[in-house]
Amino acid sequence: MTDAEAQLIEKAGRKLGPKAVITDPKEIEPWISDWRGRVHGASPAMLAPASTDEVVAIVRLAAEHRVPLVPQGGNTGMAAGATPPADGSAILLSMRRMNRIRSVSAENRLAIAEAGVILATLHEAAHDVGMRFPLTLGARGSCTIGGLTSTNAGGTQVLKFGTMRALVAGIEAVLPDGSVHNGLSGLKKDNRGYSLDQLLIGAEGTLGLVTAVALRLVPAIAARAVAWIGVDSPAKALELLRFLEARTGSIEGFELVPQDSLDLVLRHVPGTRAPLAGAHKWHALVEATTADPASDVAAELESLLAAAMQQGIIGDAVLAANETQAEAFWKLRDAISEAERAEGQTLAHDISVAVADMPAFITEAAAKVEAAFPGVVASGFGHLGDGNIHFHVRAGSHAAPDWYDAEGKKITRLVDDLVTAAGGSISAEHGIGQLKRAEFARLAQPGRIHALRAIKQALDPLGIMNPGKLVP
Ligand SMILES: Cc1cc2nc3c(=O)[nH]c(=O)nc-3n(C[C@H](O)[C@H](O)[C@H](O)COP(=O)(O)OP(=O)(O)OC[C@H]3O[C@@H](n4cnc5c(N)ncnc54)[C@H](O)[C@@H]3O)c2cc1C
Image (cartoon, rainbow, N blue to C red; front, side):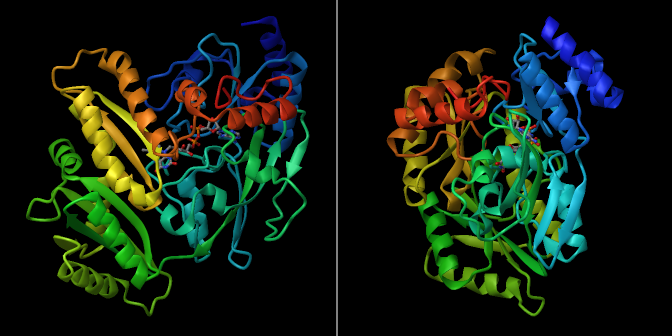
């Protein structure tokens, strides 16, 4: 521990009390590695403020002593953005004690939640007033509103409602100089120049600390219909999506699953079974919802799928008969990463290209990767309708234990080159964090990097906000 860190910890303890300053290594230990357990950090303390005023006090101390802070929410991020550096040169700042829902208003269609509120808790609070926060993802039981905002998270409803960028109506944040930006009024129209709120969304804690967020709500779902559909190719899956979208506004989830991924789930995840009897090379998981209790969304989806079958767009389809079966279909999709982990080493790439280009990209990129690295299995699954898939590459059964670090870097380089050549993004949902920083620096256009560095320097000249993350 440096002298500066020791002084900061001592002053924070005096100002904020023992609940806000944790120095027991055993209590810090669970929070200093990333979710996947691949990146390990160190920190002499974990600060845990319970209010915006306490965050201000901590930021002022950090500036005074030039000690960087690493903000953290639920630590479910996929880019190791919330993991402190391994040399212990920064202090972990947990936002989890800021966990109050300040208000939920069906009339304003807004909720104001503090940064440490867990996503599932917000879902319940919105539901209690007949509303819904229409963003969800596999980590909903542990990820926080501050983390979701700071990574501009997506999830499975982006098709209809967009990412956090579309769902955040305003932000309260403590800036690196200790001033508080209050954008929580939730104004629909506000053209006073640059949007600080939008700048903070996706900033990964590099420009300030999000303390509370105003979030847009929509009416609660009255009914949903979930279908599992067999198709010949990703191109046919996209044709199905466009067919459905042209005929109904109720589609809000559309996920692509290759047979290979389904096989892995059936093999490794207990209690799972294939929804369709025959074999299909690809599958689509479709969710349609309605907020209108008088509308029969299941009957509508069923008749649309029958028409799609008649036109030769799909091979087969089954509608979930009840909520339990609907959840079982979603589990087949949500458990793919878990099944891959059980199978062996897997490299994950969260990428996007233009929606119309995605079917060809999946097929061609998989063929190129498999040809360049014999023995690996490459495939894509996920949010086809957003032009975002998880392009995963699995090691062959005889891969060396260090395959991930040795061969993995070369494979990722090839995938990132293919994505960039296709005009896409090497990070569709998960951010840059530490894990993608080098590839971001290698592939981003110079103008983008220049602007990022200039913004960072202007707002955080002392470099105390999550250094070593995002900005190359
Ligand atoms: C099973 C699973 C499924 C997932 N599915 C998806 C998915 O479908 N779509 C998707 O987009 N992501 C997904 N994720 C990734 C992850 O859930 C999101 O990135 C989420 O937004 C992270 O929230 P968190 O609270 O855990 O943030 P953390 O992991 O703690 O932090 C993430 C980043 O935000 C910064 N940060 C956190 N809180 C604050 C704050 N208050 N102020 C400033 N900076 C802050 C951190 O420094 C870090 O850079 C998934 C993760 C898991 C484990």
